[in-house]
Image (cartoon, rainbow, N blue to C red; front, side, top):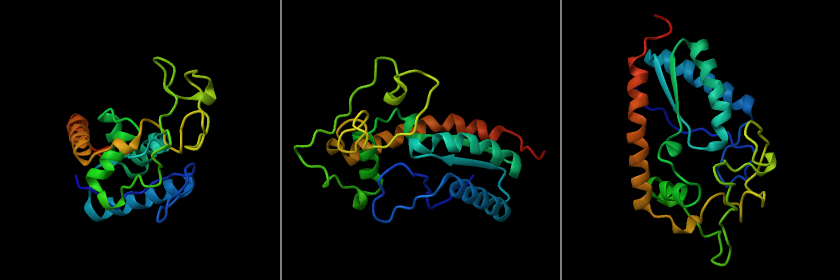
Length: 192
């Protein structure tokens, strides 16, 4: 297995910062199909790991791994490293950014007086205020929706983030991913 960079993201619902690329679902999936086809051609790889770093990509990628497996006759694993580390939005995500990309990690746009704590979800339920906390219903959302975010931040206050916490959370995510990676490499190629 080998790592492919740069990271791609499909983020149509968020306010985009300078230098951020935003792709439609069609553009995103077409680009991934093209990259996978070229990567397999160039490396003869039969196993592929997609590492998802943004919760908004989860639904698209969960469906896409089936297409990639059949279209390219490879084994595919979709990892959500931040979820593997039980990483909360806000402090946790900002900490991982501070650990991996300190130059790009800034909370200067958040004023000290701005409350960034999002309203909590109902006990035992995932936050989905547009669905009335009913499982099995999804609605499009944005990070500027005051029902789920404060000051554009979903989760706890990102100003408390530290690079040390980020490094610890990333170590947890890698350790949690090992069993999935081992299982992937033990699978026979769909072509076999």
